[in-house]
View 1 (cartoon, helix red, strand yellow):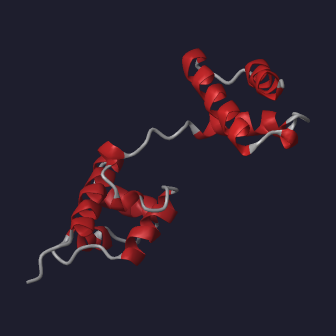
View 2: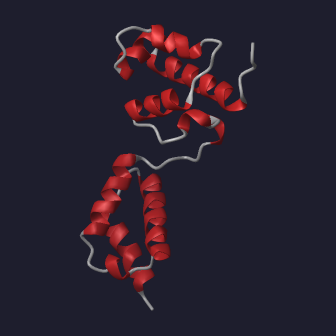
View 3: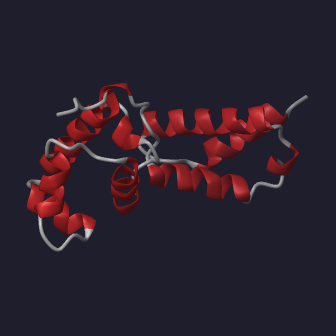
Length: 137
């Protein structure tokens, strides 16, 4: 029998993380829209998980493409999606943003997210203040 590749072993570990997160293989199967837990159990089996199955699970659970292939202990801390959406909405409504370079715009996003993390929420005044500061010549 052929040994599993490093990527297949990582996918198996991440599948187990998802099973633990959702409570059981059956609960994960329901979340994925599978009729029975047998498909999840099969993916945990000795054959390993292929590329198509890994991408399908990521898509169904709203995970980043490639999540199944990476060590979760090495994944970057991804921003809270609601905060990021709020920051983008504020920026969309700010007329100065189209004139900003991509680098400055990314700085505004990063600084706004950092501020939101400290405050526990996104403050539109803080986001717009970062735009003002970074748009000064």
